[in-house]
Image (tube, rainbow, N blue to C red; front, side):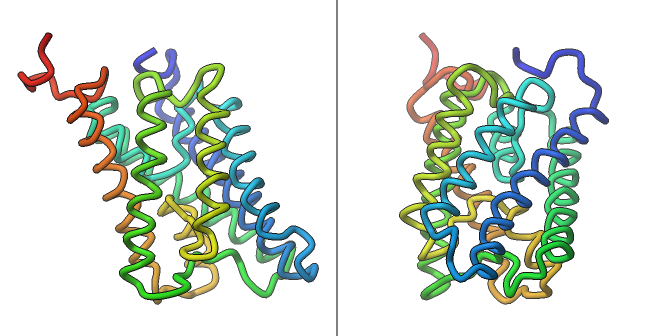
Length: 233
């Protein structure tokens, strides 16, 4: 299962757009509902919403596109040589489109006071560092439970969704716990707030690449470059 089964790139791109749409609509929708309902959802509820929707999307679309729903994850798979750069680029475009459409719908339907933008609570360097580590943790788990470039399997969805919820629970108040450039880009574009967006566009890809390098340093399966003699038996 190194690649989705006989699924054309158009179908895979559509799956990534739909999956990212679902993630951003549910996750930032929970933030929006919380803002208009006086805190009815709460921080724990928002964190669980992100984790549960990630898990659901992986189970629903993992066998179609791999359910990356995150440009940083797609970049990580490309760096790990589990997918072609051209395919990765198409995935990223689809993910960004899905995120923007979700944010437009959240704004249109819910008319919230905020769209779930990810903003640093403190210094920019602090949020940047935290986002790098969060995405490093997430991507490392993904690399270990995914098959090829696919986040699919009996436990992959549960493991990845649990990591997302866990990281949102403890790091959300600091950075918004994005770990996902598309999740941050959609709300920022629709709301027109770009002041700290660079953090969430740059830090997650760096964290994902560090996870690949960590996996390679441990000489774990599917992580080593073909010409890396250190990983030879």
